[in-house]
Length: 272
Ligand code: ADP
Image 1 (cartoon, rainbow, N blue to C red):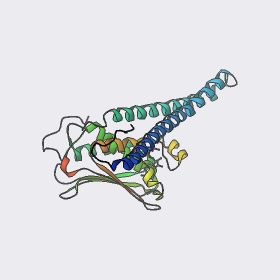
Image 2: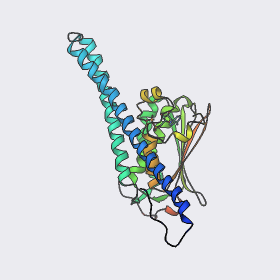
Image 3: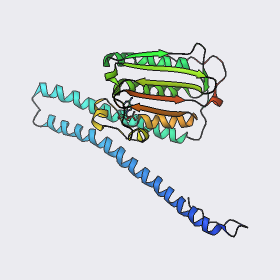
Image 4: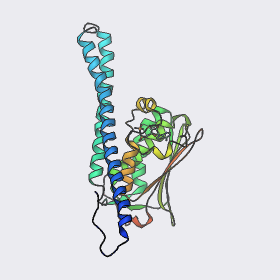
């Protein structure tokens, strides 16, 4: 949006007004550019598995028509590619729903300890398969915050899953819920894997940003997980603080706003 109306009663505002107009234009261009980049990236990410699917279908219609063993192998790859497309579409839908709700404060009361316990319990089988042990520490009292439980489950699932996948070599992931008077409620997820080089850290929450595209793909990533996390946390007025030391591991800390602590009431039965 470009504002050109002169400011009434302020003669000297002319010069400033040009600067303002210029800034608004660059901001609008930047947003436009980001949108175009996003559509291009999303199309490319969907096009790749689709091309692979089409290739396999053609091979099965032609050269592999009578090769039963090859067909079985190809079907497995095709299912994998279709699942990758489904994950991408789910994440794209999540992002667009979150964008529509960006300016609406989340409603509801969330028991933080219980929510994090639910997430850790549901991810233990996946962690076990990777040979990772998840250690959970909770405060000795209930910590309630205002928020949307499904969205927060998505945040913690993403962070714990990333810690297990990318920090697999560390064999251990620590998840800690704290509630200190001054700091407010916090959830910390720490892994002891390879860590992330400094230059990548500020860009991790950008859509489709991955440190290593191949690793992300083999680990069934879409490159949208942390962008979704960022959107949800912004809506919750919470912050994500990432610390990482290459060779030692990474810590993702979610800090809630102390002013948003919820009432100490029993939460609804949502943890099935
Ligand atoms: P993806 O779907 O690729 O996992 P995310 O948005 O969740 O996408 O994460 C973006 C990138 O950040 C990942 O591809 C990975 O390179 C890096 N990353 C995220 N968490 C960790 C971690 N705990 N340790 C090392 N790298 C990580």
